[in-house]
Length: 475
Ligand code: ADP
Image 1 (spheres, rainbow, N blue to C red):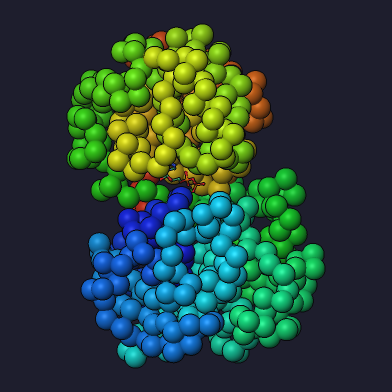
Image 2: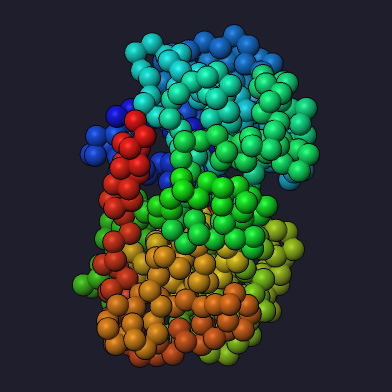
């Protein structure tokens, strides 16, 4: 079975969020099941070394306004097709945003081109390789089904939603430059309140739709979560599956992680303490013995971190500390930086993106807080479980599916792995933090939870089988 993934990010090459981790991990998990995945990815500057090593497999003399080509290369165990289109992708800075922090004005063309080339490959443009199925990820790839539909192709497609908040909505006049027929602008395809939505178009035309957790799949049909596409999701209900994300167990392994201060396992949890000391040191926190909470996140309202700011005094009153690593909303960055200077020694804040530090934080913290208002899957709670860092999570999306709340029954049955709270309010979070501190104060109960969390299966095995079954059924 040959599968083409079309996506705008792929770890370890280019990453702004969880999408990249998933694209980098699923192909490796599918390989032993007999599914060979190749990934079509824009050749951003971050991929220039791979581009230089690659082999041109498809010249594209004029791709939406400039010369382009597809280059095949195998890198870090992944088979990549790089879409080398300098007029679209060879620019410094964020892959989605210009220097002023707003979307690149030609994003419709950039990712329309990516989708168009994905569809061409699906229809046999390459010598010697043709996929049996295309899996398009998020709005940036959502026009693959549209191009295939317009060409009358029957190649099956799966549209995967990693976050429905990002939809790629543009004025309807983008259709002509994208080379799509005017009939894409109808209510059963991409028309969306007078504009053209890449994601809606992909959702309407794909053979099947998946998202990254069963709970998020249900939530997407609800107006509170569907972000205006709940009706579309209801319409596709019979073709919608939620498959929870896993993590790369080689990259996220506390026994071998080169980015942490001291390796440890569920059997020698005491060594986790050395990571805590290193982390306290790194964040300028006093070497207290109370619970150390961490946050590793984009700072946006989705992530609910404004709630954490509200309950910070209560967290500190429990004798707890906070270490936060994140970037995003400027107001929130400032608010956390202010909190750090107000509570020096107890609150440490690093504004920025630092992959290596995020590993040390997972290793050195006692708990990780994720108060998201919505969370399609979430990865940081999975890393937390693997590192014995107890997740304290909002009961939504993938957070609800992957963490077992330490209520009395679960503690009694010996199956709790974290703390969940609902509703997602400051009071809900405050009570969850209080419960966590209470559990932390019972070393035996806490250690048992940590060990259980560390043994929970968070890899890709089960989910890879679910993807494989879905793909197989379509081919
Ligand atoms: P989302 O994709 O919505 O941002 P996820 O939890 O699915 O949220 O994935 C976020 C990924 O990005 C995780 O791998 C997390 O460790 C990483 N991450 C987020 N912010 C930072 C940061 N400031 N520094 C390092 N890694 C980060």
